[in-house]
Amino acid sequence: MNPTAVTPPPAQPPVPALLPPPVSPHASSAGPQPYRWTIHQYRELYKTGLFYDKKTMLLDGVLYVMVMPNPPHDTALNLACEFLRSVCPTGYHVRNQQGFDIGTTNDPGPDLAIVPGSIRDYDSRTPTVALMVVEVAESTLSIDTTTKAELYATAGVPEYWVIDLVNNQLLVFRNPQALPAGLGATAYKTHVTFAPTDSVSPLAAPNATFRVADLLP
Image (cartoon, rainbow, N blue to C red):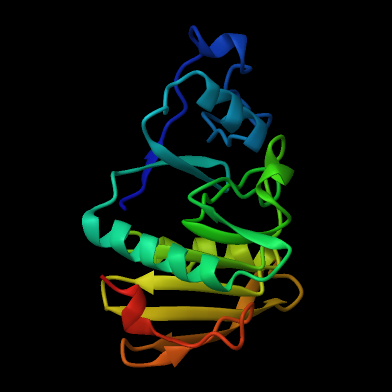
């Protein structure tokens, strides 16, 4: 999927009924300032129907619209979803391309996430913690392995997988840890690359071993 930054639309119906005019609180006579959406504004904007037929995500206050996924992406997504649901531990369930709140300006919209509780636990709220997150990456490989990896580490997700369709491999990120003081960020300490012939077990299901090729289209 190929993310494209979207500039907030001008305040005109029906948006004004839901959102304040997009004026940065830091605006000054120095010139125009970038406007960052909050999760609340992002969700209210979605209600207008502007993006009803599109998959979107919010990263550091910037709204991205994703292009329609291609068949290889859908195949890898469905294979991973079936696998995770087959090994999902008791007391958790798998969410497929749904919201995941990190702070006040981030909803990366992961492809798959193992979250605590049942489906009905989230009928009026969005998860903020996850046992594991999976992204299927092709044109989004760079953002999935940098910006999104840092966001999931910040959220304390113990394990993050990127199914890399560009290089036909699986990237596994583990052990989120705060970076040295002053950097103000959290990152995964462990990065491991698995080839199609390799076998791997998720931390959430250590007894479930599978070949990486079984997740690739």
